[in-house]
Amino acid sequence: MKVEIEKKDLLNLVGPTQNIVEKRNTMPVLVNILLEAEKDSLKVFATDLEVSLTDQVPAKIVQAGKVAVSAKKLFEIVKELSEGPIRLVKKENNWLQIEQGKYRSQLVGVSAEEYPIFPTYSSQAFLKTDAPVLKEMIDKTIYSVSSDETRYHLNGVFFEIQPGNGFKMVATDGHRLSLVSKNIEGLKSTVPQGVIIPRKGLHEIKKILEGVEGPVEIAIEGSQFILRSDSTTLMIRLIEGKYPNYQQFIPAKLPQKVRIRRDAFLSSLKKVSMMANEKSKAVLLNLSNGRMEISSNNPELGDAKDEIEVQYAGHDIKVGFNARYIQDILGAIQQDEIDFELNDQLSPGLMRPHADATYTCVIMPMRI
Image (cartoon, rainbow, N blue to C red; front, side, top):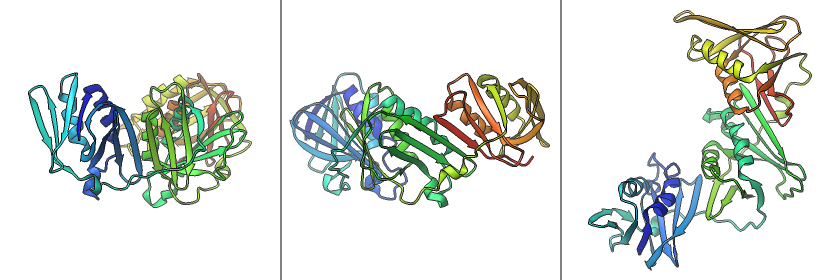
């Protein structure tokens, strides 16, 4: 294998693989990426057996071939080289020689035959969707994904395609729930039910979507979620298991309704929660006519309270919440005002952007 390639192209090829390759050495070969030179392009394959990425960039192929080398070390070397062409040469012992000007280095490689068989797909039933829409949906749900490995079916976002309506994404960790739906006219799909996309896969989807303004293609085939954008293909192994009936966690007809300025609420929470317990981040919301007092108390640190104006005309109510959970919700909302619906100090609260029913967040109360 002999390849001449521009530095910027090689960086663009190798950079996105850095968070995919296996760093825990459960299989030593997975710290590598597979490079394949053919025709007029250099291809890369990266996988941890859960998330797999393939991409290609233009290159001058002097001699076709393939080799697997350390993803991290190749990226670090290329990053320090000067702008301009770089020459890659595979040696007989599967080492990869990297040349630029008077610089030479050789990376220990492994035979391409030792690299895991890369997943493939045959589906032609790809759906087009706007990249910003998909990224927004991930941003509005990923923070609610559970990190409890024993509840593996909650370690991802439930993704549902609703023919004729659009997409729906849901995430919950048992303490909060985020649900977002986007209508897409004329959407057709043969996917009979929702699937669970793992957190790591969602982060990699987000990275590909960043900076993409136009459409991307998605498909679900067997146990794989597939995303295509230009020359990039990302394949994610779905989480097996049944997602809980999330609809039963969404409270209906909550009697106490509050309208709050998002920025004022977020600023107040940040100031008051600094004095809250580090683990629980518990704050107390005290609602009365036209005002909300937010307070925290930590015997080891002290206490804090603040007051903001709200649109509220119900009876007085005190309810405790994890401030970080509310901040996550407010961080995902772009609108100026939010609606906060409550019942009592023992019942979950419901938050959504004002006059926007496409995004719903549920948060469980805390005893304070």
